[in-house]
Length: 425
Image (cartoon, rainbow, N blue to C red):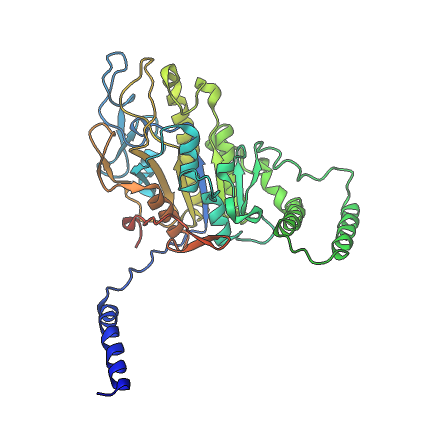
């Protein structure tokens, strides 16, 4: 064997094991892909107690320090799936809903850190500012109609809801008053359409003067100006005219939170891709969903308020044939333990809690996953926060295995999450 023959044989022998592994390797599993087009995400700041809402257990007694649910449970439209007695309007609709009862994270049970985890899917990092779920969806799907924002926050702005390394283009438009719409977008009465047109012509002239902008921040600023001009148009601002809706429908949605949910439906109709709706009723019990001590005594008012708005949103979307295209999500930063604290309320629990999905074309089952007898530990089918996010991405047809990029650095879009396969197909 001469030198050339020896080298050829050696290279061939070295390649054969690799070729064998490639030929017989199992194919990658097919991506799960749903048909949802929009998300309405309801945020229960403070932490909804799963044992007192969507994962009820035996009745407890704070006076006797007997761990358990604060309320009785009731049957739902799905056999063997029960919910709290104060979810009486949602109970008949649970065949359109899945209470994911085994969500968990390992973040310290403190509000700020857990809120960040439940918005970005990751722990706080000293080197990377991760984008929120809403910004990621905005980045991947954009708005469904030109001239509207892809992401609207009905609540107070916060860095955890922001776009992180994705940049300003994928951030939110926010409002706190459903009657007036976003601050700064309402055109003053003295600015007539002709005057506005002259202003825009002047702006166009100024933009044409300097050389092309190399700084991405300047390009983002220009994009923000363009977006604000579109958003101040009558076509978009009409979404905030809730008085156009029939009085009986508005009444079905209920109070201030219900009107936020009704506005979210109107924004979906106008092409907004992702809307987060914050539930703010702190004045009812002084603590909102963070029911330590005596705050738990009025918790049923919070639950009933959620029940009314959530059930109205489901039936309204269904009547308009929009439910299969709109994924509804209910989350908080963590759940609550079954034990009562010294004041009769509950502490924090991130090791096992419930998040809720509805609509969105998923194959709903009332509940997914199982906790132990007191909803303290996961007994079956755990769902990590990345898994829950991957389920949302998959429902929207987003590739949950891809990378985003922080400059040249690849960042997995869901930190390796896998969707709940049982909800697809």
